[in-house]
Image 1 (cartoon, rainbow, N blue to C red):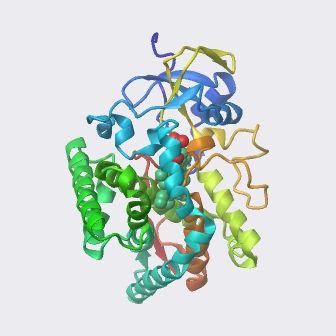
Image 2 (image 1 turned 180 degrees about the vertical axis):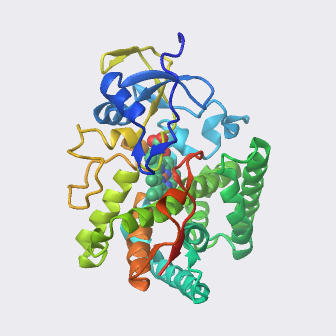
Image 3 (image 1 turned 90 degrees about the vertical axis):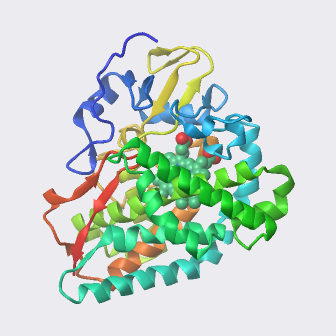
Length: 399
Ligand code: HEM
């Protein structure tokens, strides 16, 4: 590739908390496919328009998936496709693993988790309420948003209580870009080791969770490394994302209290609030790399075979090609078609689970605390911009 065309404004930062930076919006209008220098460490084409992002994600033959260049799990004798990280696999390896898991993520299968989600939500709200009696309110990220997704994922996999206690602080470490790389890597390696240990236990005695199911039904076709990788991927892909959506989603609703009653108006209205939050927040700053398999012109820009593309859900989901006035949070709009969960063969397998958690947790929170409010000025909110997913470090609330 030739020189970088554009010194990229931080793709992580957002204006006034929620909106893409104006420089990036201008890029989408003027140079929708732009060569940038990205934290992957190599030059990449940033793709910002809705139609282009959708086209690339939908065409996995011309735009294959690849691990980011720094990806540690790509090392190993059987290459990327032995790691279990099927988010960077291509067919047929991707199809094989995804098929094995798909049945566990249907709405019907997930319904069995509903009682546990309800119980966990209620227990954490009880705890918040008890703690808040002193008049100090609560910190919503650590006391609510962070715990629910971890409990749910562990429940889904059948991870033991002891491992959970250790995994929880580790997971917040390996996704925190403000920590030194070594510390993050050590946390990630320790989490990986816990998963390997967990796979060993499950091989000997398969439980009722997803890993037990994988071992019972496909155990001969999967190595321990793949099984541990699948579990690790699920924790990394499903934990911080849902946690961010819970805390940022609460904040958006605190800024737009007029929409809170929709959470209780009926399933359709409630689900539209959640869907619009997903679009509006688009917490995945950018997707895993795609590699062009042939020379191709996208929005007038020639991209050469072998070059990397980085698709931006936050920009695509605010593009007027998707709808009108998309910088406004409006749960009344048609929520379909957004790209917050990606698109095509890598469309988020955990989307039904994430939706279920948000659809259960947000109404429960606002029902329990009808007077919920921010306990600090909006300007003092601790944003968490430097991670893979947009989020909050803390959200002090009172009621
Ligand atoms: C894929 C977002 C929750 C597991 C993806 C992708 C996005 C995404 C954008 C596509 C990545 C790409 O194409 O490069 C989100 C958001 C979530 C969420 C915004 C929460 C609101 C979850 C949960 C789980 C999960 C709860 C699992 C328990 C995965 C996996 C993939 C994936 C395994 C890879 C799928 C494949 O390659 O076939 N997610 N996710 N995600 N997500 Fe999620």
